[in-house]
Amino acid sequence: MGTHLSEIFSQSLTAREQLKTKLGVLELNTPLTVASGTFDLENLEFFDPSCLGAFVCKTITKEPQKGNPQPRLYETEAGLLNSIGLQNPGLDLFIAEKLPKYREVLEMPLIVSFSGSSIDEFAEILMRLEACSGISGYEVNISCPNVENEGIAFGISEEIVYKLVQRLSSMTERELCIKLSPNVTDIAAIAQAAEAAGASSIALINTLYGMAIDYQTGVSRIKKGIAGYSGIGIKPTALALTYKTAQAVKIPILAMGGIYSWQDALEFIWAGASAIAIGTANFVNPLSAFEIIMGLGEYLLARNLKLQDIKGGVTI
Image (cartoon, rainbow, N blue to C red):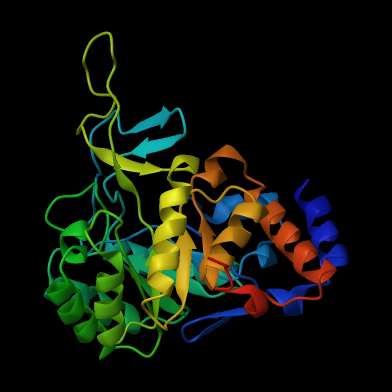
């Protein structure tokens, strides 16, 4: 099936020029990427990899993380609760084993997502990654709601975000994308702080807080209680925060949150996103990326439009 879809993509999608976009310092052949932790190399067997403009790996941390105890996933009426907890092999193993595989397979830009427990630790991770080839940029995850002493703690304060991003931006010329949390009072103000400190793009939104309880027993469906809520149910919130942030900053936005179809993706482009990422949709339909990019391409081609012609063009 993968070969057949690859042929369809190669033969029918003549809208490649219409689909090109920029994410900070990166030139992307398509506006589509994948949300960290929802996709890996084996998923590329389902469709032509050139559907993706970039590849974002699962968030890594300095030390290995076992993740949170089970149960840590629960499917809700309209989306998914997850409390994985940044489970990953750690920086050393990522550089030694995972990164070479990415370099061997990927033809599109690789964006490495990482998180830390202090500004110094964020900087230490970045310094190590800067010495590695095959990396086009970074997604700095300051917004994970499923871990303690890292992640979201950095994303709730304008002052801390500014200090962190200023430190990191002085260390790299690669793409520096700051992933923001929706669980704040004013996401636009946080985005402005990141932009002022030298971020070259913004990623949003990470998951909302969510919870589910067995009504018969009163037992939480997630071992840690509160989890991250993603999927189709958060799309209106993600769309609103994308629009609000696009009005506040000039740097590009990588938008995500409830994108399941090419029509969903178009809404985020109209709202001001330069690129979009699919996450939970990958679990529902492994062909989501292919279907979304084909639909976007056909829409633009039929109207003789480029992506940039409609970006931020929503009428209020």
